[in-house]
Amino acid sequence: MPKLPKGMFRRKNRPGWYMRLFRGGGERWVSLGTDFAAACDKARALAAGLTVGPRNAGTVAMAAAKWLESYIRTQRSGKGQQTAAQRVRDYVEPYFGNMLLERVRGEDVRAFRLWLEKNTSLSLATVGHVLSDVRCLLRWCEDSGLVERSPFPRRIMPRIQEQPPKRLSDEEAEQIRRLPEPYGFVCRFALGTGMRWGELTRCQAADVKRVRVPGEVEEMWFVEVANTKSKRVRRIPLSPELVAEVRTRVGRLVPFATRSPGSFSTRVRRLTGIADFHVHRMRHTFGSQWVERGGSLPALQVAMGHASIEMTQRYARLTDEAVLREASRLSRIGGAE
Image 1 (spheres, rainbow, N blue to C red):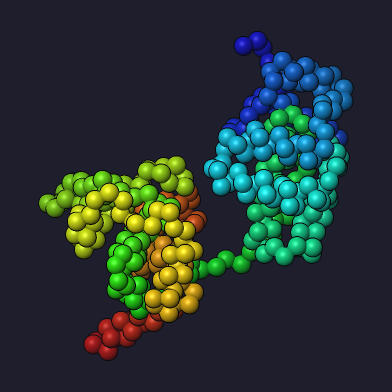
Image 2 (image 1 turned 135 degrees about the horizontal axis):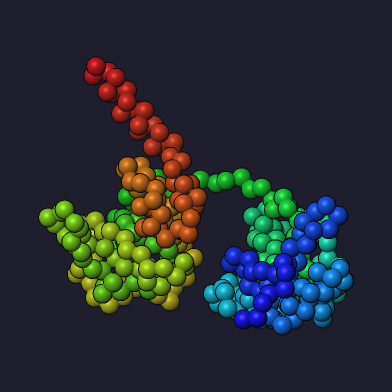
């Protein structure tokens, strides 16, 4: 590779080339695009003090269409692609319209957030998701050389009150475990593994395997989850009771591969009377019970397939029920003394 112009470099985990400029006592990074020859020309022009603007940036709508076709299509799942396209169609295009990309400023993005909150029925969390996509779009524009720098401002994302995992009570969990088949087994399997609904419906009996744990006499059984949200294979230990059930089955373990989680949840609500039941609450129950029984957060992160420990830390906030049980236990110990 030929010698790079002075000040031209790559940024970690970002495509394309960049240049650090010092103007008016301040520092700013300028995207030079992904084409090496064009990036060199632009870097030499900037070093000489010339003004080099974006080329053929077009409107925000044009940039969003390229972003969907290039970045989103290669980085997100089919469902994620559909969601991003819908957000562009429903919110980005109606607000920004034919605004030129190179004229978008931070205050325009702030006004966009206010417009979302005032003129749509979106929850604050969904507003955050839309803004996250706009941030991704503008960063892609910077990396692609369409703009010198993303205009997405700092401290614009809405602050959302953290919600504890909505788990089932111990009585509700026991109630769904006792449901007639096949609903009872599906609920016991979900409560015992914490898998997402899509992972449950793809799980096969052949995915249940055993391994000898170093230093232990008995072998440990686990279910291997390959097609996951994070694209990482993970292995979830199984209890002896669940192993005994699973080993009697062949083929697909959950006989609801074509059924949506909503329809399954509706059926369970009718059978149990638990008005706010949803399949994802079984996953929350698995994580909460893991912590309540003394399991570690790093191990739980692996078992649940969380991308970061911050997501897992939500389960460290015990329920009122767990706190009352612990207080009762401590009072008995104090009374015995």
